[in-house]
Image 1: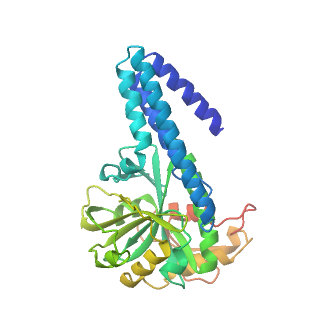
Image 2: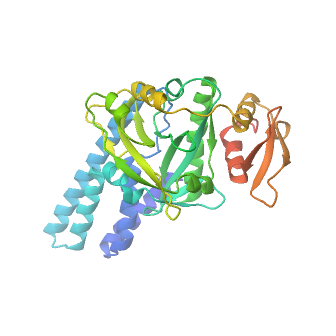
Image 3: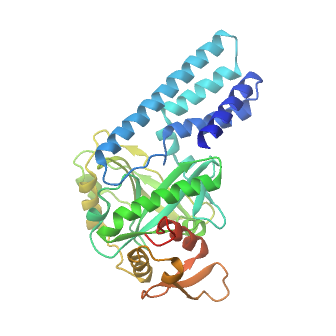
Length: 359
């Protein structure tokens, strides 16, 4: 189904260019450029570091190839006397070459909620979807739990210290993005659970509540890493990890801003990529994460009930008074945990087996 949709969109793109429907052509072409970017498309396992490096190299090569082809198309359009088509193809070529820097800019950090879902959507690019999961630990350190991650890690050290994974996916439709991102969370949870960590997906309202902030970027010097990281002043750090290395980092001081929730990006690309283990070790000295709570116990019990039907694992014990979106639920003998219905639906898919049981 995916290739049929892409083929149909490509034909529509050609027709839009032929009939000078530039608005339609630009929208479809930006979608294809972001698909080539490969955000969230890979079935990466957190410990497959060698495969992660090869996957990153393939994405860079595809982006450069796409940019080169678009420049050739711009030259052909110029030779044919085109004007708007030349500008279109040159703009798309620049997007293909510099997509990482553009996508991590503050312009693209603002998000809007998607009602009844764990997804938020980029306000500038409506087909870029983000799912955020909090890492709940029952044992282990920041380094031992996350050193194999090949995604975006967000560490918050002020007010409510927490670690999040921010996963992105480009799709025209919400349900396609949700399915892909829940599949990635499921694979990540399978790798993290034996280490004593569990993923708690946040619904869109919770994401907007926790990230209703304005992030002021702080420069981190690359020399003498990670000593420079220890000396930097920040309360939020974003790490884009690939293959056991830090590909890019973003350090921020946050200011409360209830009007425009935003998810900051790793905007500072590292010329010499430091080890992720070393970076997490330094962050572990600065950030004290809270201990296990009722939600951690709930997730641990949920994951331990392998192969059991949901009806034999979950017990509903009520909900928040006056709220229809929040329920109190326990798994086996765990304490009751208050979750939104969107969270509970997501966890049923993350921790469910193919036969309808858990894990």
